[in-house]
Amino acid sequence: MKRRAVAVAVAASLAALPARAETGFSVTTEGCPGLRGAEIARLIGIELATVSRRMQGEPLRVELWCSGARLRIVAIDPLTDKRLTREIDLPEGAPERDRTVAILVSQLFLTSWTELLLLPPRDPPPSLPPPPVVSPDIAEAARAEARDAIAPSWVRASFALAFGARARSLGSPILGTRFGARPSLLLGDHARLWIDLGYERGSVDRASGAVGYSLASASLGAAWRSSRIGPLVFEVGALAGAAYVDVRGEPSSQATGSSASGAVAELALVAGPHFSVGALRFGLELGAGFTLPRVVGRVEHDTDVTLGGPFVGASFVVGAEPGGR
Image (tube, rainbow, N blue to C red):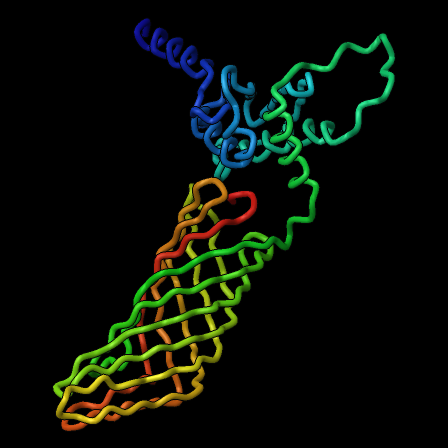
């Protein structure tokens, strides 16, 4: 029994120690089984990335105190010389407790930093204490976080680039490389609309020479995004658009070259995981689609080259999204 009592006392002492995740925030928990201070500090650093990237020296402090299902949060903000407190009911079995606490802490700091957007009075009363002295760089980062927090956030703009490969004419495969630019609108936490402006180029060898193709496309896309699991989300979407395709033969000396071109329609489904690092997002996107009508490049004494019908592909996506959510 004595050993068990000592173990409990040691565990309680360790839980009361501040947990840091090198994010500029220090989280202390007391009587809060299941809450991970280091993970909460990391998530706060993601939520308040503009400030956390600039924090040096003493971190911003957060104190968590639990009594049963009741949680008391204290955010200590040296930028405005304030202590902000909030109490909530947070049962031990509640889902995503660490993330819930991190979001609540972030809201407290943002509430405090909104004060930094107000112009100071020209002649402050002498009875007021002098404002706290903080780094101008950190103060400006806090103002930026506060501006983002009070700005309308249901619709947000983002941008991404996609690089990858596609296989067409699956019966006699033709491989091509593809580049795409994607301005997007994020709608809430789960929906995205975007324009995909793409360029694709590839070639295939035949006995009488080589046949190359190029394809320029513009499509509209819509996607649904899952809730976050740490830094990961899973996204699935659909695109529909038009393209102009050009197929040209590069014959050997014994053959005659020809070309074919025209407008086509493209439909595609895409899906894959995305990983966020601050405001940056990296993703792997797998896709399959259909091009119609067929554009056929005739090849003398060999299999024709057909740009049409089903295709498959994979792309690496890198982009920037506001807030890094």
